[in-house]
Image (cartoon, rainbow, N blue to C red; front, side):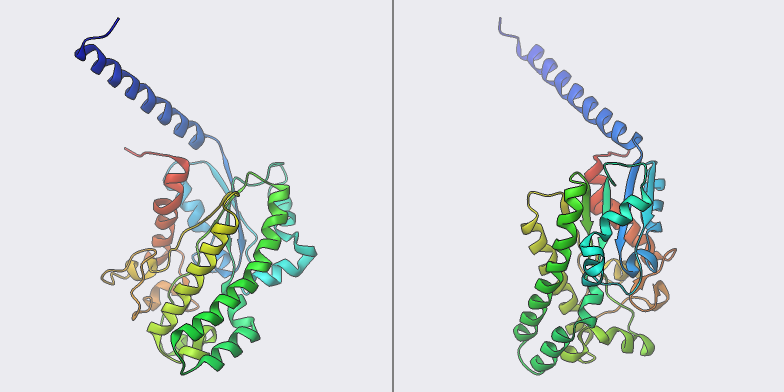
Amino acid sequence: CPHSPAVSRSLQLSREAMTASILLLSSLSLAAAKLNVLVFGDSFGDTGPTYKVLQDMFSMHGIDASVQSSAIHGTSACHWAALEEGTEMVQRTKHLFPDAPNGPDYVWYTLGANDQWQDGEFQSCLKNAKGKPYDEALACSRNESDRIMACTTKMLDIFWRAYPQAKVLQTGYDVPCENVFCQQVDRIFYRAYCGGNITCANHMGYDLESYHMSQLEKIYADKPYNSRSFIGATQAAAGIERAAAGRPVWDKGAKCSYTTLCVHPKYGSPAGDAWRDAFWDLYFSKELGIVEV
C-alpha cells in the first residue's frame, strides 16, 4: 500500500544512511588493507621530493602502506625502456615486492624530464625555432613527447601484461629555483629556445607535460592510468600569490631554499610537504574514497 509522505521521507533517509554506512565501511576496509606502492623513475623519486613524501602521506592519514622505490636520478624513460627489452618495471617490482604476486596496488611513475635535455633532436629543433613564434617550439615539444611516449608505452604495456590491476599515477614536475647558479642548470631543458626567459621556460615545461600526460590518458583510456599536474606546488609553498598545485605563476621560480639541486622540491621543506599534500588532495583521498572527520 502507498506510504504517507512522512513515512516515505523516513524510508528515504534510512536508505541514505544505509548507503553512507556501506560507503564508509568500504572506505575503512580499503584503508585497513596494506597497500603496496612502487615509485619508478628518476630523481623526483630519489632526490626530491622523494618516495618518502608518499610514505609520510599514508602515515599521516592512518593508512598502512609499503612504499618502495626503484627511482634513480638522471634516468629517462628511454633509458629504462632500453634495458632488459623494456621489462625493468616488472623486474623491479618482483625484486621490491616478492610476496605480492599481483604486483603493487599503485605506481608513481616519474619519467620524461631527463629525456628532454638528453635528446639532441629535441634540442636542435628548439635551436632552429629560436626567434620564431612559440608554436614552432611547441611543435618541437610535441614531437619530443611522441618520442618519450614510445618508450613509456613500451614499458607500461609490458608492465600491465604482468600486473593488469596496478594503478599508475604520473604527476609531471615543478618549476625550478632561479638563482644565479641554478639558472645554468635549469637552462639545459629549454635554453635553446627560451634563453634566460623564465616565463617562456615555465610555459614550455607546463605545455609539454600537459600535452604528454593528456595523450597518455587517451591511449590508456581502458587502463588504470591517471595523471595529475602538481606544477606550481613549490610556488604555493613559498606563498606566491595565485600559485597552486597544477596552476603555476609563469614569471616566478621556486624558493631556492625549498629546492634540492635547483629543480627538486626538497624533502622536509614546505615544498616537499606541498607535494605530499598534493598527492593526497588531488589523487589518493579521492582514489581511496576516505572521508576524514
